[in-house]
Length: 295
Ligand code: HEM
Image 1 (spheres, rainbow, N blue to C red):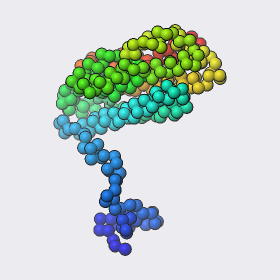
Image 2 (image 1 turned 30 degrees about the vertical axis):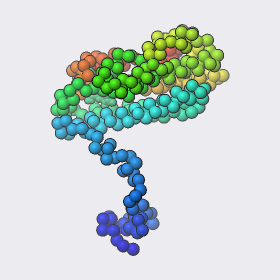
Image 3 (image 1 turned 90 degrees about the vertical axis):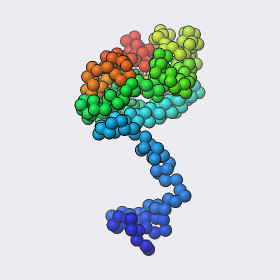
Image 4 (image 1 turned 60 degrees about the vertical axis):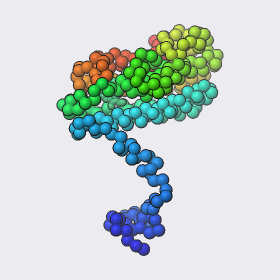
């Protein structure tokens, strides 16, 4: 047995396997990864860990950029999951959609928790590099807009900042013009025999829909008879949870922003906290909230 000179004390390498220290008994790990795809390769870590920009070299830039990138990755997963849920709903298959919603909610919780990390940055630390950000802002997150479109909060005006990127406009327009996940759920209600107005089922999908009485009445029936409509009731409760978590994300973002920049105007051009405060009033599924009052 030959001793590996790079191995820590206690470890030993033999036939491409590396024996861990004595405290691990006979445990070995693969040491010869030549010609194999390693953890590093699969995760494309050279790309990911080299993708953090530097504008001034100030210490807290790392937190700022990594937090944004991590959130974008979670949003990517959310979209992946929600697109799959869309197809399950279209196929009248609620169980796998519920499994996805449970995961989406965990992701949302994670996204909310992450604001606590941001608030460890002092206003003065952020001001050291804020000017370097120019006009860039989370307002230009196309994945965030995509998620809003998936849930039905469609505002075509929000495409404006992407005019210089026709590829992104194309992707967002595609999502804008097709039914949202919630539209698809309302179509499911119609298939299950609830009397939904035709104007709801066949319309210009690119517009956010105002609450509709026939949809509210359907949800009311479901809530009243949850014992017989267990699946649809559970579906409604998943949606309410998601809406609640989304609003909590907006609220935490708004508060984190006020802690860091007070009432300064946003780099994206809005009034800043004033705009974000108004956004906290948005409900993704207003009909499901209206149901409560009418029961
Ligand atoms: C110091 C940290 C941050 C500050 C000061 C800040 C500030 C702002 C402000 C002022 C806006 C309104 C648009 C504008 O005029 O710029 C905004 C929007 C937004 N920010 Fe942040 N933000 C911060 C961190 C983050 C992070 C970490 C994310 C994660 C992705 C994020 C995502 C967003 C999104 C998605 C919007 C659009 C919200 C909407 O239109 O409803 N922000 N941010």
